[in-house]
Image 1 (cartoon, rainbow, N blue to C red):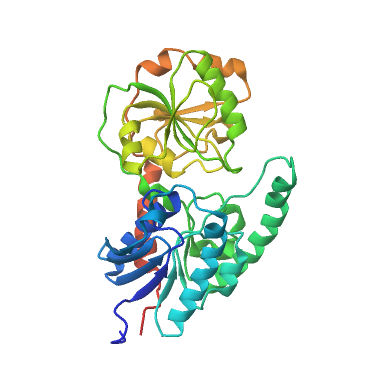
Image 2: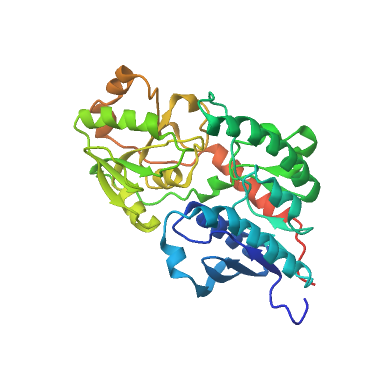
Length: 358
């Protein structure tokens, strides 16, 4: 290692907060990478400056204002990645190993084209839009995103020796020639089942984010039916303007987990069946309600914890809302497919080739 460079890898993270999904994912990934590779990493983020070594993250400089808020601004979402590209090029010209940790949606072709050569990448995110076009936004998601996906995929597999996707939602885009390079469902590595508390006093806990990816309109119809039957609903995250719910505001992940320990049901909304809130619910033995489009597609959670509903069917929802489903909440258990993911993770981290500072 160059005497003027203290670290083996210089990383950029658009979000490194332990309170936001992208930050949680980046932290988990860099902890594992630093431990397996036994290397020292430097992480720069709008949240602050950190180091990671042997699986331990240490903070050097913190931006408390940016670290604590739940929602990032438009500028932070779309300009911080560009700042990250520049930051990594500066370090690349200093002969340092470089890494881009998160904010890696497959549609962001600019990243995959303009990042420095041999940049190591964290988990790739995104999903293929399959729903009906109902406006300009859905039109872009269906056609423009798919066009960008094809370009990004070509650059990605050309420049990377191995790629880890956060879910398997993009798996159809990976051709047979690149199968050995691709690993899927990194998010499942966040499964870590906690203690079981038999007494569950909260009926429903909802994680609400006010952006279009979430299927909020359909979910809110479901919530109105649930409220009409006298069930109590608590909401964390963005304010939900629905009469009868209790908004708790922005809570830390730790406080949310304490609520989940005593929650009977959560509702998964959106295209990702394994988002962090859903994984945390499973870790704390809450039952999970999915749209019926996910029937027979959830293989990492035991079946006793899963309920599939047609959110549009009033009668089927009413049939589900009976006392039998709420009297006994079973324990979460690891499945065989979960153990396969653990083997996959081990293979990836042991065999991934990194270009360190020299």
